[in-house]
Length: 187
Image (cartoon, rainbow, N blue to C red; front, side, top):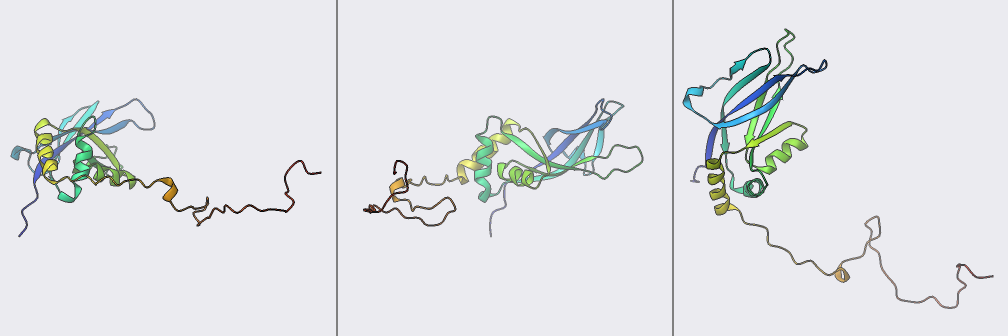
């Protein structure tokens, strides 16, 4: 039986601010990722709602660490600002004049996850991760991350030759003698 994966439960706080723009009067953004507390409950709820701003708490996200993604965590840790990555989507417009919610879908500490989400053209934002989260992530990476061994680059003289289309090419050292060249200067 395999050991359970390390995890932490978190909640995501999304912020919606009023902006003076006739095309988009409200803008959603990721405000914070916090460690989950039982008092948060299990359902999303507003923390602040007024004419200028809304903040919503979305509890119940489990962030598991996978051994086969240790490189993605390593890339996060070695970046200038290690962070949480959150993928979120907006609800469909309710048509009632209410602002559609921006709901978090997934939370990760892996650069690889964030890259896949961005490649799929999802909305992904990041916020700094707390020092205690980063300490636990560092311990996990130290135990499970094995950098790829550097491969010795073959000298160019040993590389196979290809033309600009990727087809095999060859070089001949035979000199063509006696033929009339088509070059300049012949008269």
